[in-house]
Length: 138
Image 1 (tube, rainbow, N blue to C red):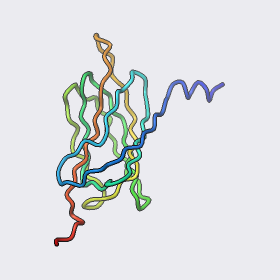
Image 2: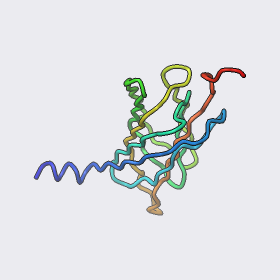
Image 3: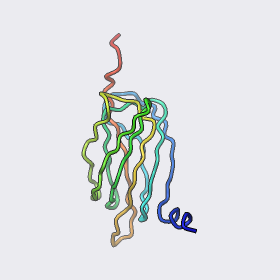
Image 4: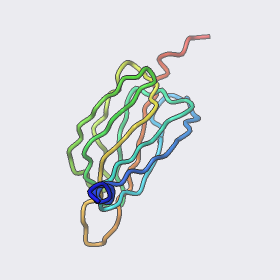
């Protein structure tokens, strides 16, 4: 009974995202609609998944971001404490990943939409910055 109650209070969604572009600069990796309950989302990255920096952008309604975990191809894990509300159309601080540009296998967030008069859900976008530092000149 307690397990069912905990599952109802804390849901988890999982997505797999194919990253196809390897061009230098900021690229949108994924976007999600955020519910009003505390939620954990896991995004598995496949393909061209090396990034030097990450950033989150909020649209439509304010979101309370709590934590972010970055999982690397080499087995390392980076815990990023966000613990801050973000307003509509606000960008997070830039999050540096381990190494100059590292292969990321999964990113997990804990978040929820903050109550608002319009009862509108927030949208969260995940962006990654590629430097292509590992490419060799021709």
